[in-house]
Image (cartoon, rainbow, N blue to C red; front, side, top):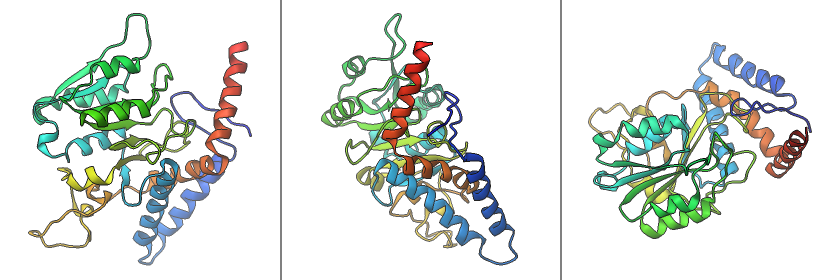
Length: 295
């Protein structure tokens, strides 16, 4: 196996250009056909992307949907929570989270009634220690956002330990898996959390615009996303303006007409990761890192 990963950006793999070109060409041919098969085929392609992501993190059927990016996914989740889950409480995040998410959260506190509490780095250190995060995490934390692997130091936290603490104090626990998914194993079946956000860039070798939101069934059932639209319904083709209802599954986090191209462009990368195996990818990465360290 050979390959090159542009750190913190776009992952590649052998034959990526050809696979992406074939996938996009197939979509182009379907979308340009002079018939009525475009949307059934497009939505089926999106579903294949969703199913690949579900297998990757071992998520239950109906708990995962697409988002343009991680920031949009987190906003959609927060905007769907029952008011009492955040109002008058702290929202806990580490200073080494991806900055875009902190920018978002810093602007939402007043509107949703929470106080943003950012766990700082220790002087001279490049990531927030798990124990420091836990020490700030009491029962008044409505939601804690965990960073699986940091974008600046590649530090991997102990999600299992952190999530267990969150369950014990009654917080909503979310995880941003962006920087590590595809090279480090992560499973919501093995490590239950309330929600997961990610992109398909980096180790998954996908394109921009192919984010995801996964929400545990119990939390999902209580969410009423404010960002909603015709695709949030059980039947998107229900046009009764006075009879809107949310879909029972993760489709309730959909809203307007979904973007398809990012899913089509990203599926080859997801399939390559699944076919290759995360253990093999991690071993290859570790070998390359050791070789680089010796230079």
